[in-house]
Length: 531
Image 1 (cartoon, one colour):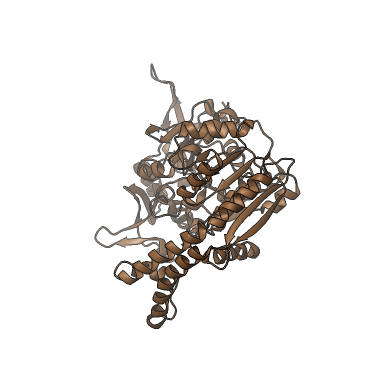
Image 2 (cartoon, rainbow, N blue to C red):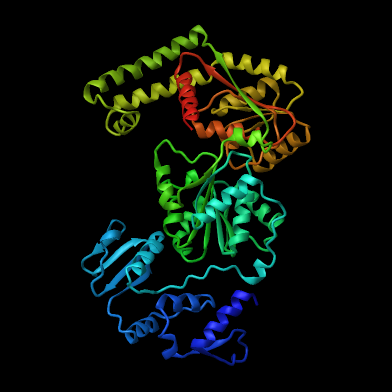
């Protein structure tokens, strides 16, 4: 029994008499000394009994308040996917009305489950006792706590990030470059808090990687898995975003810590349920780039917490935690026939935008997307824009540049990236390089990566499947044939190369000049300069 458990038991004995356990029962039972218990504040009573995993029933809570002469209080209960607030007597709720919805028929307020702590703290600060109809007890079982031991020492910046997160009451987002050790930081957060934990990840590859890290580095005796056909819930569980959101209503009170790996996925309309339908008081978001082009990353403040720590790759390179690196852009020209096709497609798009200027002078790109629902011309314009983009991204001149770079770095490990599968397949066929795409079976992918790590293969060409969620062995050279211009994608691909190593990592970006690809690259570079 821990010192904290002994202290809890001592306090309980002051307000309750322990009874002899009945035959076959392994836990102590108590007879409440009501007069003594009623002298304590209701919230203290609830917390005290929650520590021994006992729900201080709503009936007893009301009896305590009645004996104390309290006539104004609130009740909080769960109903499906809502938190229900029932006031008794007049309660001043003006400050929290934005997160409440009033049901006049029932005379109740509805709120999101994740807002429980905001509502509870507000009510108690106002002096209104809160009767809860559910028990929140998140401590890990002693058998699990006893095994937790991290077999790694945190780097200085990881310690700083974790300290800031703890200073923010265990809520917030930590932004570290790919290769910066986000998993290790998450493992140490679990060890320090010692509460039930759900780690939520975007891919089954990451499920496997987190499970291995939990078992090997943190010594978790039994790791639960939600996803890939498995539904095993343990005190420490790893789940995909799909499974966590689908099962969110069944996991409301199960976990005290949520770790969102690649947290930029969370704000999507479906995945956010994993955060909104949870009573977890602690939340940690991990990502290399939280920003989303739909601006939904601003919702992370409420879903997880604010960004509490952020560090750039260059700073980690300076301290030797990431490989030193260079970024080189190589301009490629379109052939005459490619230029003609590009201009033909762009002409149709530009004609539409000129008409749109007359209708809506302040239009933005998403205006065209919205108009595709009812405007065939908008659909044709976007279709031609994508065709023009493909011409630029797949420029044949890039193949010649790839060939030249492969000859230059014949004996070095090289990763080649392309947005389009058919380009990946073409590179693989032309140069005899192993490829990894969404079509590649997991077993085959593992064989290729293992061979790459051992040096049996020194080149891999891949699509977006390796952009996140897969541990890739060290490489020194990266070649981006085609991308989206996304800052996140660029950083993820750079991160594939930045494991600490002797050689300097070099990332080559092949860009078709005087096209929309050139513009996307400049926009991405501008975003980086503004950081």
